[in-house]
Image 1 (cartoon, rainbow, N blue to C red):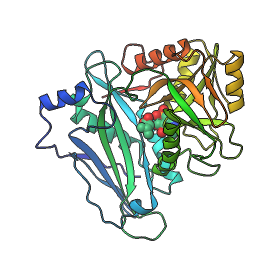
Image 2 (image 1 turned 120 degrees about the vertical axis):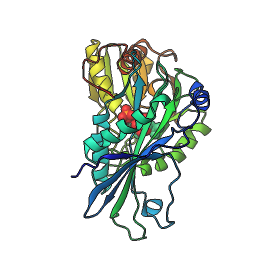
Image 3 (image 1 turned 180 degrees about the vertical axis):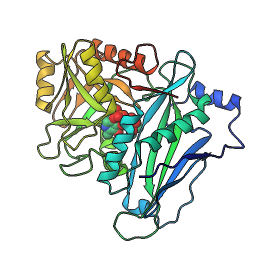
Image 4 (image 1 turned 180 degrees about the horizontal axis):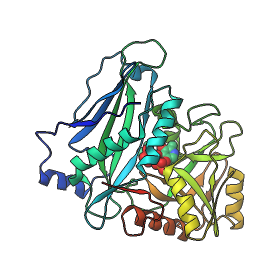
Length: 360
Ligand code: PLP
Ligand code: COI
């Protein structure tokens, strides 16, 4: 695979310092974008070429662009954090690059070399470094993605693709800060099936989730919890987050069955929890286990985790047949300890013993 270098074409009209500071004061999530983006093209027979860092701008697209019809598209999400000395570092970008390759394989798309993925993210963050919030949990969220660019309506893998990285300053993902979310167990709709695309980060999985998310909202819940497609009782994950179940000193996350996303936060927490002296395992948790553990007090906390959401406690559960409160409905001690330990690594407040931070 060839590794194109990224040619720099800076914006002649970046946002003014005052405008950028106004955005950074309350960025929300995914609402504002920085001054630049990186683009790299792939063409059959030529491979990856034309890496460019250019002003952030709309894409012009033929109405018969294959992505618009058949959804051959994948994406990633990772964050850059301001470090105590004022420098900037990204969290586990190599893991995102590898997952991007695995998503590409599942969608019949070309694999972007890991070093090009990293170079593209680094180039964008360096160029737009003033967009990285000053300190703490706020971060610059990077959204690398790939789309097919071939024009035509034949159903087959395209012969041209475009890889893009954009960046968006991020405050807290949930507007209320760390407050427990309520979840709806989706027994009617499923997100992914064995042999399907559930383990890939591809747009179709999210499109398929929206009707259930709307159903959750109708039920007064914040988020959907997906169950396995066959028995509809094994807990898989949430719409944009993995799940952890806390039984005192033991934490359990649903095993990677092939139909849930192998989250990088999930993987990091297996290691951080072990460092903190918890027993951290992958296993199976059914909705009955969840309800029973709650009733007899053995299940003490449940939380969700992901790049955008960091760690978010789950406070209550609703399904077509039952409702219950998790623990006492407030953020649990283990949840908050793990959240702090993870954020301390990401923000440089704690030593990076796993070598996860990628300084720029
Ligand atoms: N599950 C889904 C469906 C997601 O979209 C995400 C977000 O990326 C996650 C889990 C968590 O993955 P990560 O920790 O790599 O962000
Ligand atoms: C992420 O956490 O990076 C995600 O992709 C979740 C969501 C915004 C889709």
